[in-house]
Image (tube, rainbow, N blue to C red):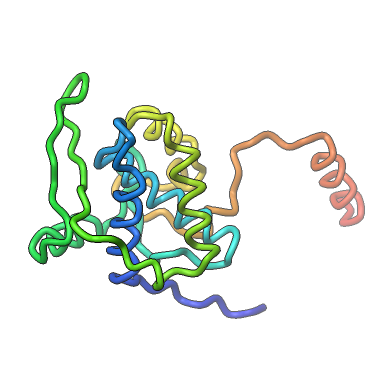
Length: 182
């Protein structure tokens, strides 16, 4: 059995990804802190599925509103201190939306072409949804459902699916079980 590589967090890629997402989402009236968390989560987990590694290596914890990267608040503070971003408060229906506003362009050279494609797909897929809706979507993720509140969601959970098996998949499962005598 092959040894699995340890997943390492890249603070630089994380910062540049936050900038990229915020830049691409400037015209999205539904973009705020919750949606940023979910875009980061869905992008890292999609990259893990497709590329065998996440983009940033951030650790995502199960919160009531859905997955959130543990590194976001410290990174955001560093980005505010170094004047890379500013936070903007906007009235939004039932409350206040907190938006990350980029003060410089992201350095996309730290990403592969495939990583940017994945992130852009996630941004596009989530564009029509507000914070409450993307939160609900994240609650359907097997990884979020498997762990207790406050625990980290393992990247390997990206391979799990909550979709029902197709008839073809079910038939294949029965064939394998028969071959194994079960």
